[in-house]
Structure formats: structure tokens, C-alpha cells
Image (cartoon, rainbow, N blue to C red):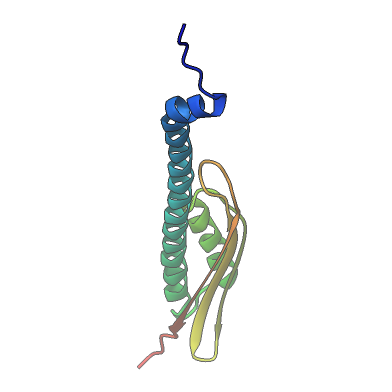
Length: 131
């Protein structure tokens, strides 16, 4: 009776190797995709915050702006345009020849949260002066 005997590790490598390698590759691809999505959405959140801060600085450069009201408005714009933003801190002021708007907030990306991002944006605009 010629039974073919192979060691157990040899059988696993020949029959299950493709399954194991495929599963590992699929897992790594999923992790990489998750990381890419989080980085891309972080860039989108930063861009949206940049637009809100630039608009706030332009409004602050006009004569007679209300700093407290503009800070509230900037915070509301960040909440509306950047889902997941929390602990929002704003500062809008006019000093010297510049109007400055600053925002800092923590942002949690959608999906599995590997890391909370801290996003800071600043915009400076020259003050509008009468001719």
C-alpha cells in the first residue's frame, strides 16, 4: 500500500498559501485605503476651513466690522462646512494694517478613527481704507 505521506507544514504551504496570502493582501489593501481616505478627507477639511477663514478675514478688513460677531460667524461656518470639527477656537482682529482671522479645531475623520487631527488655519488681509 503506497500511501503518500507529506509533513503537515508542506500540505499547508501548498494548499493554503494562496488563501493566506490573499487574505493578508486584502487586509493590507483595506488598511491602506482607509489611510488614504482619511488623508484625503483631512485635506478637504483643511481646504474648507481655509475658505471660511479667508472669507472671515476679508469681512474683517472692512471698516466697522464687529470682531465678536465675526468670531461667532466663523465658528458657525466651520461647524457647517467641516463635519466632525470640535473644540473650535476662533480669533478675528484688525491690528495695524492687517485684518487677521485664525481658527483652530480638532477634527475626527469619518470611519475608523486612527488619529484626531488638529487643524490650524490663518489668513491675513490688508485693511480697506477710504481713498
